[in-house]
Length: 285
Image (cartoon, rainbow, N blue to C red):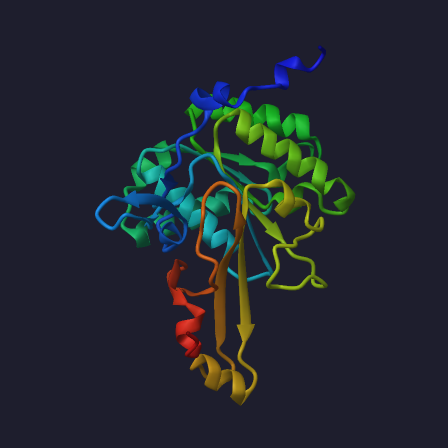
């Protein structure tokens, strides 16, 4: 049969199945993904924090502008690189020299070893080369070269939307190719994606429709709301004119996760600081 190589008995996949463990982000997201283990003393199953995003997961990070998507991606990248887990960072929006400055500041604020970060991160500057943004073969060949060069374990693309701007009809095809590529090369991935102004800010939808969310393993939605009424100020315990920022895991096929919306802040030094569930701030149960 022509496609017999793609047919498996379930038991044949045992040795090929990836182990489930967390890849730390350096944020409270590491506690928001979990696994379930059997507790013999209690004779029941209990939740145990996974300790990061699932190993080998390809996660979409989406939100409207100024919600902290790039800051989260950068924080994850420097945290992993400082722990000697090499990272490939594809910058599609910001030229690489500006990215260097941002990453160095992140490492300094987090108290990380900058030499380790420098030695364990490799950058592809797609912002400066049209062919890398519009020719998927060229981009994937370059990514493969970089992965082999540094033996990377993690890939960040900021942003994947920049690879199909002005041609959103190709979004599903492009994201699928990247997803399959990252799976083939055993990479844990963060894909930053932008929302169009017409899209609801709290959903997993991004430019290109729901193509990104449907294809990837999971989506993290980052959002913000400006407090403009006394009612909202009272509800959130903030002053009129302040901003409340939220983060939520909108599904993940590889691991269970908290379904609540969490509140976070962007510190003065540009770090993502997740505080806790929104329900506790608003007085919900």
